[in-house]
Image 1 (spheres, rainbow, N blue to C red):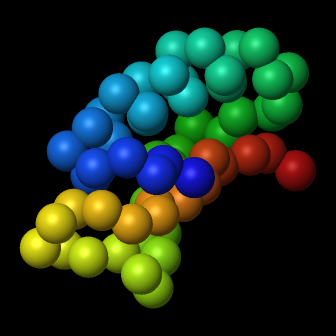
Image 2: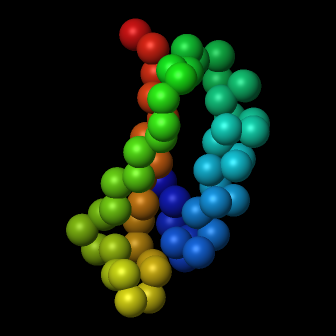
Length: 58
């Protein structure tokens, strides 16, 4: 879950694809990731939880 401002979400996604995906050993699918904005997300401030879902092969 990304807990910083939405303006820095690109950094979190870069860390996921640049480091975590390779180190996790999980079967990553060739598909886009998905962002799910939490109910408490405030579009005016850009703050609130954002889940980043990574596609996996089954």
